[in-house]
Image 1 (spheres, rainbow, N blue to C red):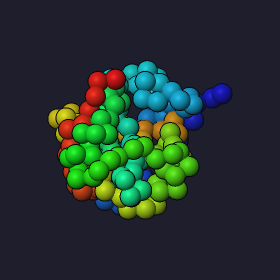
Image 2 (cartoon, rainbow, N blue to C red):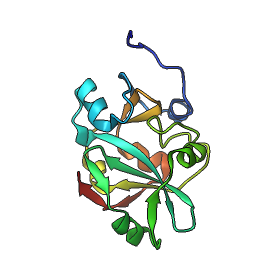
Image 3 (spheres, one colour):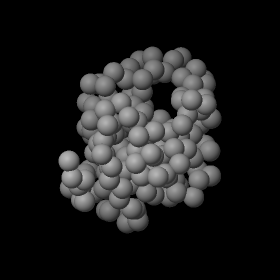
Length: 163
């Protein structure tokens, strides 16, 4: 299959453009369950700099987004403690799709269908640039990590577990 050269505008890129955010576009061949390991391999980015967008929910089924390094997992216990929740768990894919308006594997924290609180692993902010989903499977955008705080009002957390 020929690699696509361009992606149609997504709600994420529309928001980034509307806010004047400079970003780079990175296309790769999406592989089911390939995750950040696959995108970093194809694009040549360190997996630590590829940030995954995880749609989770608290004990009351209230959705939230966690931005995490591609080579780390989320300690849901530590996350819950830091955000004042009793518990946090990942949403089922169909629930995550409904909340975000994106398909799992193509979820961007920008331009979500439903407004949700966003939490970002604090060490991500120390990186010079990150690659994060642009709102479609096989499509990442390169941005400064501070954009997540400025546009999404993301709150920092420390809940990373080494994968």
